[in-house]
Image (cartoon, rainbow, N blue to C red; front, top):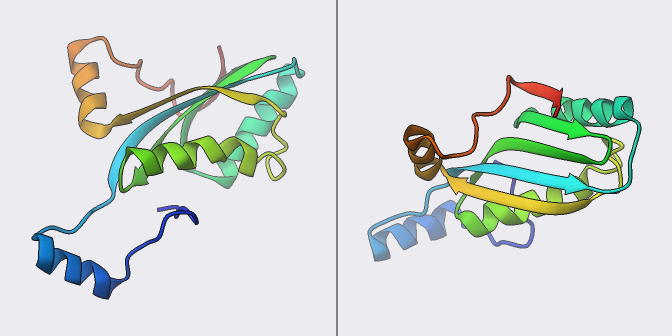
Length: 139
């Protein structure tokens, strides 16, 4: 699990103390994240190469779709709550801009779904489409 530097983490001792006091210990959960970015056009081959590098560097990336001026990535994030999952997602593009040579696009959309909600929406037929085959593909 990636850790947020801005969020204090519990030590085993403090976590055990919390569990004794409250009767429960906070456990990380899975969140399905869709991050959309957009900006000035970039050659399609460059966008693909950048997203493939991001997927290689960070294998949590489940799928990516892209065009010359936008991209969408989907992945599962392990986090304590929605706020932590969203915070990590909002930093993802900027933090990896240099290492993966990502375009200087801005985040234009973010959806974070709890695992149960994701599966419920799929079962009801109106949820996010299951991610395209693992990997990076054009729209």
